Image 1 (cartoon, helix red, strand yellow):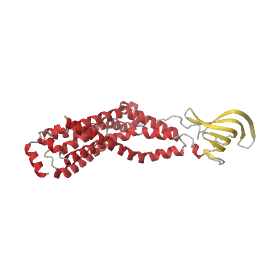
Image 2 (cartoon, helix red, strand yellow):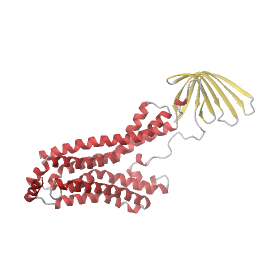
Image 3 (cartoon, rainbow, N blue to C red):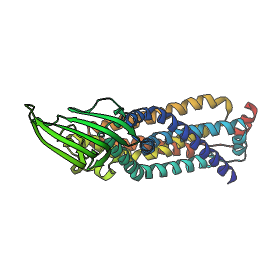
Image 4 (cartoon, rainbow, N blue to C red):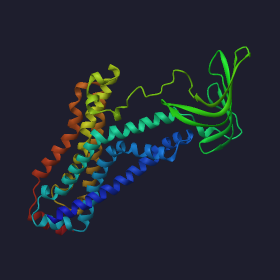
Length: 370
């Protein structure tokens, strides 16, 4: 029916616009930490953009269901004000028929969220965590200033005469990280590279000298190329030891054997069932909102009451999901409650739409009210 297609287009455009706004707001708050990390480590703008985009699938799991819920309320409020909804009801369309567009929107949102939860989120968040680890364990090259002695890591001081992009010239390095000797190096130029997960300074045309703890000089080495690994200690990790729950697969989250420790399994178990159930919020919130709006007589004087009921219902569903997730974290046998908190609103909304009756007398009352 053309009317349902018209409503669906309105709902989809509104949902996309609201999702963009919500993601933009979350982005402004969340990327402050990303920007601080990137700036302090002297990373490229591309690193900041990659981290910003890679974390978006996690935000979409929250923003999309809420956007769909708001879109249903917004669009139906507008078509009620334009009396389009009254005309459709007066020609005999039932609430379930009028709810076809919200149902289609909810199915579309749930389908996307399911793909996002199972495939996109783990892959993108893995990229985010890998880049975050790399930046946190990199040398803050932005701290290196021309003509200033800087302690890049504990017991290692560096001086550069000048700097041109990534190439540094006239370098002096004082390395006291080893207890039994002190190493001094000078070089005409040098640049940072990454080797085996650790930042490495490649020096060109220089001299390396050693002296022991008593101050006695040792060997002096003249070199054309020399590499210095910049680490805080010899035990510094070069790879991430753990995998974040958001980047793990649902199968691993639900498997006790995949947990690094038994104490982490309940939390991972709750996350796995949440990842399975949360996509259905796209359908649940949109469908519940449509059921509350369309049940009974569609009258403008009843709209404020129904809007308040809608908002309260949305909050109750979200709170139920959060509370049941907490229950499962404490007791893994309660995992069905996570799914019930999402599917009960869907079943309730369908029951409300199917049991609602509309007839010619409703249209007359509505016309008298308007």
